[in-house]
Image (spheres, rainbow, N blue to C red):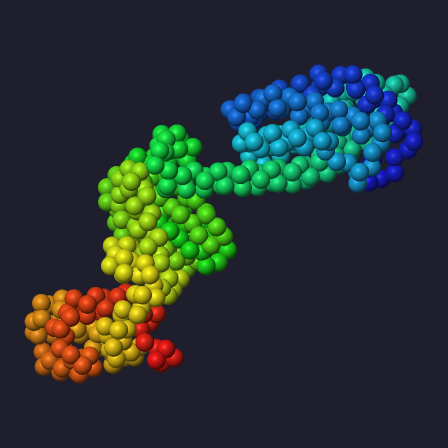
Length: 406
């Protein structure tokens, strides 16, 4: 029972006192519950007061039984009823620190009750101090053993509930994205997010571990409204962020993420469309091999997103239209950039030179060189050429002609 030797006489007196208290156990449990509920009002707020009473009575019975039977500390364990009640507290939303504090209050209360009971029931001529110490030592040891195991029980139940809620949330989100007859109000209530509002969607790829903090930081940079964050698999999180006005451009995310953002949209249709755009932007980011800590906005890659729905067809188109200009080297990159700027400047040599920061004769030379490489004037099939140049700049090396692909 204790870390020091306890005489048989003392143990016998401990059993006598505990046995005398056993009929009072329901009342003792109720008194303890009143003390806990008065000191921890969160139990009442979570409608858990009745559970506290049941738990206190179950623990009081177990404690007295351990004292009567002189159960060794290594054999002390919470009863099935106590474990079930602990799981019920988790389901009510009680935090683990509150539950553990309730057990500490309970141990303090029981040591006081034990001292009073020893004075009443130990009998004359008894070494009351030894009996009180033995019982108090057992109560404190019992608290240490039981609280550790119940904390583990609590965490297991909390994890189980989190998994269930996460699966239910993912299922609700998938229905919100696809169900033509969705009950918007009911689904919004379950998700805690207004599907009828105005939102912007993000799709995030995790590169390492739990990126929860990085995800919350990114969504907070767009809006201070409560986001909807759903982890759909080990590597992917979907987010929607509410806002009243068009957001500023989100900053680059943490290095643990590759992020993509849809455009601001309104209502359920916007919820779906912004998400589709974010998915498409992420596909472009991954084709372009965007590195950690990057954010790809659909606005910037809309054309590439549409054209790369069939990635291999897209890459074939780029390489076919650019020909030798699709080489992945510095010379070809310079010619492609010059052509893009030339088209953007409405085929004006001096405007192109100003945009590039070079002499207009340099622009003329590069365009002549590009015509040689293409084996046709740039004005021929201009639309296809401009599109291929745009895709090459957005999709990068993936779309170009590497030496090993020639």
